[in-house]
Every structure is written in C-alpha cells, then in structure tokens.
Amino acid sequence: MTAMVIMTDSLITGTQLSNSICSGDAKLWESLFIAADRTNSDFAARLMYMRNSGCILVPHNKFGYVIKPLPENTVYDQEKCCLEKFVPELIKLLSALK
Image 1: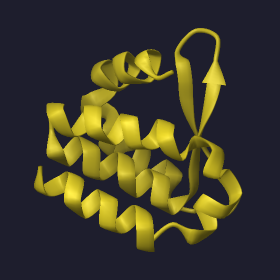
Image 2: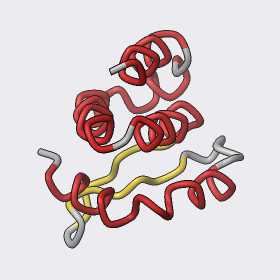
Image 3: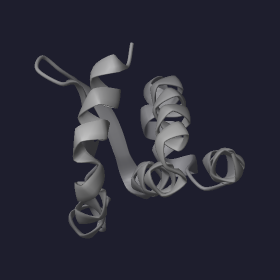
C-alpha cells in the first residue's frame, strides 16, 4: 500500500496542469491506480507517472478506456514501453472501469 500513498500525494501535488485539463477522469484514474496497486506497486507507479506527465483516459468501444497523451506530454512514447509487461492486466483493468 506504500505505492498508493505515494500516488495519492503525487496526484494532489504533481498534476495541476493535467488535473485542470482533464479533471473529469480523476475518479477513473483513482480506480485504475487502486486496482493496479493490488496487482503490482510498480505497475501502479508507472500508471501514475503516465497520468502525471499528461495522459487522459478516453472511452473506447473495444477496450472500455484507452490511455491517450495530451499534446504537452513529451515522455509518453518513452514511458509506454515500461508498461509492456503489464499489457494483459492493463487491458483487463481498463475494460473494467466505469
């Protein structure tokens, strides 16, 4: 649960730009972080970094939601490779978001 505490602190202090742009998806991200942290704290931390660097959750017909970078996100392509080992779980979690 340590990762969740770090994520919560970071969400409050580290994402003013992203939160102001996409505050509508904050509860979805919170649910995603909690579910990911139950699987693996590194997985949850990487998702939070993606969120904090400027990503939003966008509804998708096939996957429920997808992670999409905002235009100001310059690290998305570098960081998405760190999620590769979690792709099956990520798809499952994104599909379960409501």
